[in-house]
Length: 272
Image: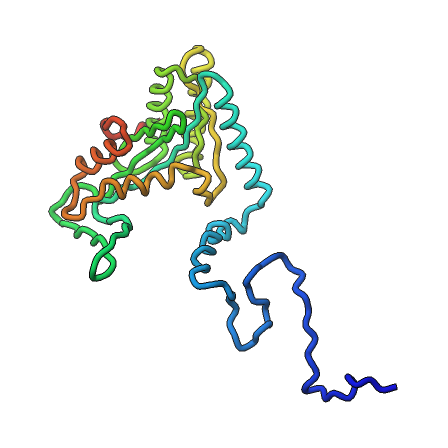
């Protein structure tokens, strides 16, 4: 017995279509699904911008997911430990450059289109640095930011000076242990800094007074795990000056006023 489908010419017979058994990828075209169309998606307009948040995750493709989760769990465990013990504190540390020339991205309404802040021109006669390097520590509880500007750039010797200042200040406030959460910058993981922290903790333990530093390193290329990162952008926008270029003293004072901290002399590199 001949079936009708056998009599249909091959050129009009529907081609077999296969189900995609890969992981969910809603809205994305399969490879070779449409040969005349480049790979893309059928998402609504503007949806591509939301997908850009994956770029940071794609940068971590060379790292083990289990390793990332383990480091994040350790950070969260140490935060819970600090919250549950008296005279303990936890803080997020980072460094930043505040430019005197570049302007932050701001949005404003205007009749003739979008307004954009222009970068200040560099003056050859201006001997001040074009940007100020700054060390910062954000203490979520009680919601305080401590800043120290740097005479130069972040290096291991300056990091030691900043840690010594932080430990002394918190010890005077009754803090016995600080859970210090920071990234893997070279001036954080250098042998000089690690040796200084180890010797500092030994001195504090032997003396029975002072503030020990319990370091927690964040995974590489994971700024979203450090809440102090977006606070830098907020500070840049708060102290912006569209009309003229700020001096170094003006910029540092405005930043300290914004973060509600005392302006202290800049840190200098300490020799080992």
